[in-house]
Image 1: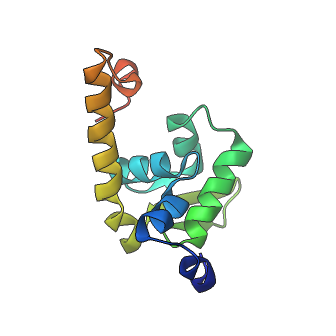
Image 2 (image 1 turned 120 degrees about the vertical axis):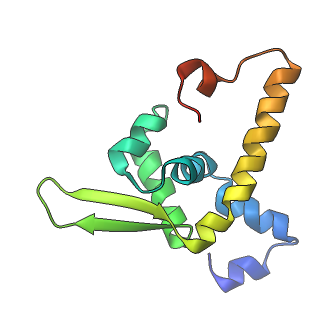
Length: 122
């Protein structure tokens, strides 16, 4: 995100939503928080509803905003790993709070969260 884009926001919450509010961005940050370094295929497995195009776009945007770092290994087939940066790690509290709130919302409605039904959550 550029300085000009940041200066165009009306409050810090707007900036946070712009950075983490993409369709799968908070979920990507969540999984990297829980799992540490992950390969593209691991992230895709954790977010099966994301198309390859959308997942790649969200990863590129998170990288551009310095939330994640990408390391490409020069092997055949190519190996790419994603890791949270220090700035990304600082967002972990936000996604954990979202998880806690979401679990409470499910509980309020007497429904088990999907990630618990699939055994994917920690």
